[in-house]
Image (tube, helix red, strand yellow):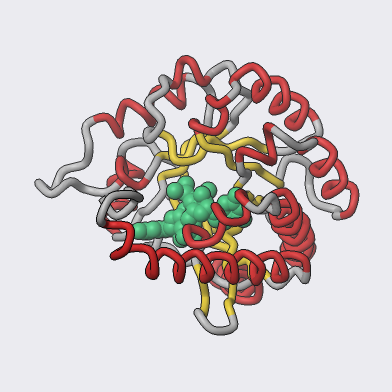
Length: 284
Ligand code: C2E
Ligand code: MG
Ligand code: MG
Ligand code: MG
């Protein structure tokens, strides 16, 4: 009940609230400065093919290295960036950097099927901003293989305004990007309904991927994979943490997985080393 203001409690809670409010304002202005100066770090987490465990692509995940508080996860600053109206700038930075990085990886890996990279898109970027323009700009600035930049959007995001989202996503896809439905299963909409959006990939949320307290996989996992395939979509399982996660996912017909079992989010150089070492392994 700490949120309630009024009655006797106000004297007790006021100083603490005031302190928190000023911390929050400081954090906001520090984040504003960090975004304006592009002081956001991007880590890349491998997405692997379960068939041979080769790297198919990477997901870009933002970090903020705060001078005093240390490295901050997106859960601690993305919503602030949304509230202070800087998520469009942040999102554009992540998209642009990732596309440039992807071009570097693809040039280094010329002999193999081009890897992809995916970036997370926030509600405001899709609904209240000309994302089409930003995507076109990013694609024109970097020479990446068509279809290898992917955008990840959650179900709840597209459901905020389904008509608008469907139109926008169709046009964005025509520019030559991939579209992944992120955290699938957490938003309660049916895959059949989601067919109206031009997603080519679904990413199954961690909560459906890992074993339950009874040591079994959620029964629905198998059906989600099968249905996604019936709808012509690729499937990525999120949060694969153990080798048995990977083995069982493959047995269930899932073709891609992402998770600590294959690698934590890493910097661009480490990602490059992963690709190069993998190539050496494949050659030997
Ligand atoms: P997400 O898009 O679902 O990203 C996957 C999250 O799961 C990442 O958390 C990743 O580090 C974590 N993860 C990966 N493998 C495992 C695993 O095996 N076990 C567990 N327990 N977790 C795993 P992270 O980096 O903290 O990002 C959290 C969320 O923040 C992301 O969820 C995404 O929604 C958002 N986010 C990250 N970067 C950006 C960005 O640049 N823009 C926007 N708008 N959102 C972002
Ligand atoms: Mg994501
Ligand atoms: Mg996800
Ligand atoms: Mg998630």
